[in-house]
Length: 443
Ligand SMILES: NC(=O)c1ccc[n+]([C@@H]2O[C@H](COP(=O)([O-])OP(=O)(O)OC[C@H]3O[C@@H](n4cnc5c(N)ncnc54)[C@H](O)[C@@H]3O)[C@@H](O)[C@H]2O)c1
Image 1 (spheres, helix red, strand yellow):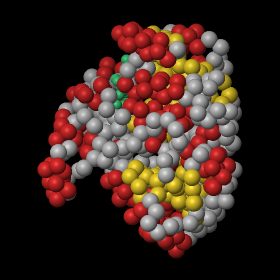
Image 2: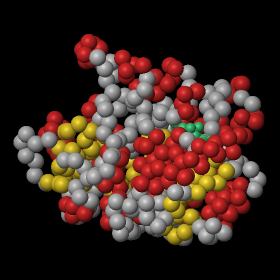
Image 3: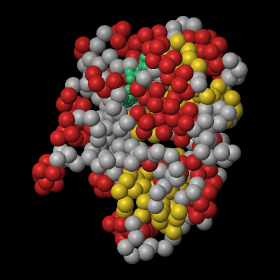
Image 4: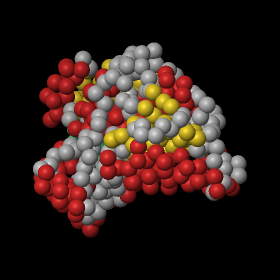
């Protein structure tokens, strides 16, 4: 992390003070560098829709698991299938599984709880227990963040329970370093099955990804990670970023489209640049024009909203209308925690980014008919040029007010985008997943 506080607390005297004064002490987060998804053993527990399959699903992902707790052993992950809990009283099974092992968590360990989608429960008791999982996961995430560990919840349905592999692999791995306290819902549309990639190391091989705003920041990181996973990249950015964009696309063997996405002819320009079609459309381009509403100019409202969601809507509709998004495709909107929590001085941005959520949620059931998913990723405080314009106080708070006491890296958002693009993630649609280290301050 690049702020002064983190640099300052690295020496031994400062560490002594940090410990004794209870100051934030950001852990170093592990990030994926290739090789096995999980470096260590994962303890499995619980009884429900996926418990019987979990050992085999994990084995196929190359993850070592056990169902027997051993004294003195440290665990890199804990997975608990809670989908069978069906009353308030049965939630104590969570305590019985987790309490004895929480002191045995390795640094940057992962907790994944699996539940039954609350809307699909059949009794009041089951609904209480399943909805209760959200509170459990969000709370335990706050307790274990100090050593870089995270906790997330995956809801499944009886139909989508077999499609958990890509999500389990992602959430258990260092790819999800900054995804914390989140709820992923599988099977909320008619798409419930998952396709397994021929080569797990290059799950996106043969696919093409359009990434807008790819010249720098999060978009550039997305282009790199999607390319790492095998996709061919079509990067898009505005004319002033053409040099950076072309340099990156040359490096990745991709192609570039230089245009302003709000231009009237942008949908046609993009369609022409995509040739015979595209698999993944990542609407990442975005800007901020922050001012309190009492000082807001209409032009800054219109610009922010049109770049974030107006233009993505027009472009998506054009591509769908011309059947340019292939079956198995993904539409991904980049929202923001400002669109969820709201942020002082960002009424325009908050509206735009909440609009992104409305956009993908409206789209999800429509595009399911053509085997396409629509989801949003909502980054929290991520270290890019965009956040450099924030006042120092807000920037410092943005870093420290998360369960992991730091800002995220562009790669964290990019890994989440790659997870949604994975062929195994077909059952995830209409979701909004925050990549924010369980922080809740708008960017
Ligand atoms: N950095 C964060 O902490 C953060 C947090 C939440 C959400 N986001 C969102 O993530 C996305 C990327 O943010 P970033 O931090 O990388 O910002 P950035 O400013 O570094 O990059 C944004 C990119 O979008 C491009 N762009 C802007 N307007 C465009 C237009 N009209 N047409 C085409 N391209 C355009 C820019 O040229 C730039 O390359 C944005 O949508 C942003 O709102 C960022």
